[in-house]
Amino acid sequence: MEFNLVGKTIPEWQLLPIFNEKVPTVKDFRGKPLLILFFYLGCPGCKGRAIPYANRIVYEDLGVNVIGIHTRFAGKVYTDEQLQAIKEEFHMRFPYYRDKPEATTFNTYFAGGTPHWVLVNSEGTVVQSMFGSDPNNALLRLDLKIKELLQSHETKEG
Image (tube, rainbow, N blue to C red):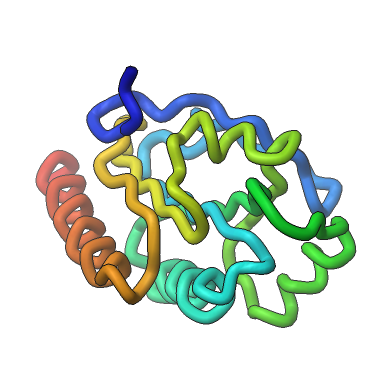
């Protein structure tokens, strides 16, 4: 059994809205690289490093879409109201949704915990999937992979 999506087409996710908006499909993000952040409100690394990193990617407008998926594989259940409040508290600049029902998409994407990152190229193929933030240099490795992906994307377009 395969436990990694790298090199494969990204599977459809199973998400619920938090803000009463329409949940986008995977196909809505084709044509531009996509960074997916699996996070959990009870995760210190998510709040302290992952969410700020995802915000930075959006703020720098590198040409990468970002989407957050709040998932719960263990721990407290957070209400939609609590998940709505974090948008302002953490100045979240990217759309985020609730995993359905608990960790369905998390499991489909073989996430290793939170934060977990999935980087997808413009054609919808997973190019990076990794767990963590700073202790394992995940954010540095993610920065390098994003730069590499964007250079490749520019070469194809140019």
